[in-house]
Length: 384
Image (cartoon, rainbow, N blue to C red; front, top):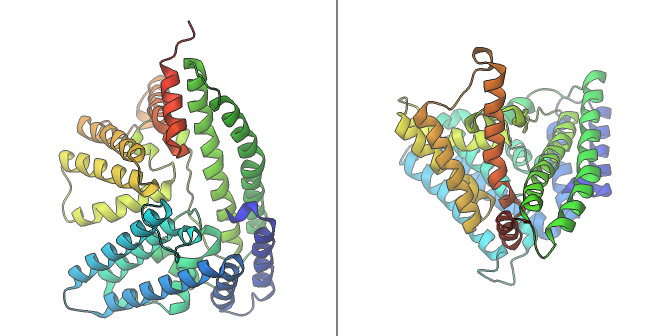
């Protein structure tokens, strides 16, 4: 959300200039970035600043504890993850007004569902690498509070971020040009395309009676809209992140040319799918899972991704829908298609089928139950 605020964009640009001017200082991006991250949050919202100061401090202490403790490591590991999930879930329930408290402010939810995934990834690293995982406090804070990816990802891996932190700040002309082009492309998507497409979507969806062709149009239109929205944000985050000296992973890898749902979820919001696969399948890494195990894990992962998006029955059904389809691909041995070993007709037919499955449920991302049901009801309303 920073990137729709010109003051925020100017602040990020200013930080890049400061890093460029101080590039001869070996630790410039570590110390200056921490100061920037904290000042940015403080100016944006004092409540957000103090909440994340406390949240990150507590988790850093938990991280160090897990690095050092030798007793009941697995129990502590599960407990610390459970405490984070419970805390974030409780805050989301406050945001949904299931609970109320005068101390709660919705601003505290900003970026939390992304940042808790980073916290858990760091706990995994501490659990599996012990004392070797120990990290200076300023690097841990920079990892959690990294402003370019703070609100909507891409989701950074702890190991990769720390590896980048150890590298001196370097930025050549080619890298600068490429990063700026990514930022401009992302801005165009977010400000021009998404704004226009949202207006069209609202105008059509707000009609009292939708017909089949209108509902189909809205489902396809919304699918393209959220692609430009999500990928536009990712483009800007990747651009600014790389200008600050960090290799931000790609979030969208040509998802429309995915011939199976298994491959689709490795290409659409890739860092999110990778995170859930890495942190669920890792407990089964000692042996190759059977087809039935892989199918069951697919359902579990997609249900968790659905609930991660929102605590509602629509997201639960969305997760079950995609999970069952992925499970069937596993059980039938249809989870991958090698483009070089099949005909062009077969490959693109599978791509079209995958997009059909995705489009059928993509409207759930709108987050508005009334809109979703209104569009689905319109599918049954034939104009003749």
